[in-house]
Length: 324
Image (cartoon, rainbow, N blue to C red):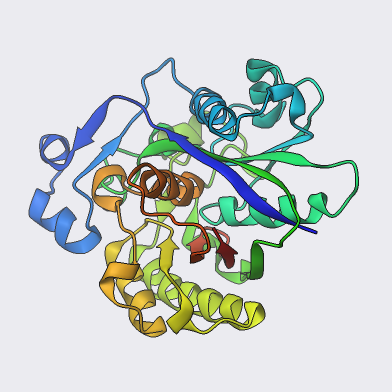
């Protein structure tokens, strides 16, 4: 007895912010952004769209594709760094929105690897008899905490959500994983204010401390190492060689980081799915958004071996090997 992904879906806001738009806002250029990140555009929420809004729409699509009712869900787990509120959990808002009255619900904050972490959580709960169908969601509205006066970070982030229904299976489709963190480096990527350590104040607002702050070069260096380590260790734990991998679906933060991971595994370019050019960095939503695109394009085939790999603030990183 094991678990498998029964369905995958995603939802992104309609509004698009292009590199050309950003050229009018800060001292940057399409060439500079594209060369360093691979990003051409990103989807951004309107004022009346929230993380729960995107998560709810992705959830509805995932349930429809799975062919199950919201009442069949035993649990909802939302991974996000941009929850609607400190409390209640965004998962509770989604539960109410879709009418999943039988589901337990809670959030996790594992930054960009959040979706990978929700899969591991779901796999664990499926080993308990009374959990059969679990909805996992990665959802972010990072543009709401993006400083559009900071040319180094404002070009990076976008909004979106991806959802998957995980169900019990006679065959285990979660083959191996590797999760790790390095909290000593947490200050390299941080939103300084808004928590209990530095509450909202006139000073924190003046200093723009309620926005993402990132030391880009250091984050890049550690991201390359972390994602390579996670992918290699997850494959080892699964007992699978890189040559057996059909797809690497990495967190879409930077094309150069993905390329470095691909080369470390010895994979050809055609085995790596990249869509960062259209969405930017959507944190915990990036992997399920990519999987959804692959599903809709008919790229995902039964029995394929897929490595999901991510690195993010914390620093937290991890990978999971799945059989589609």
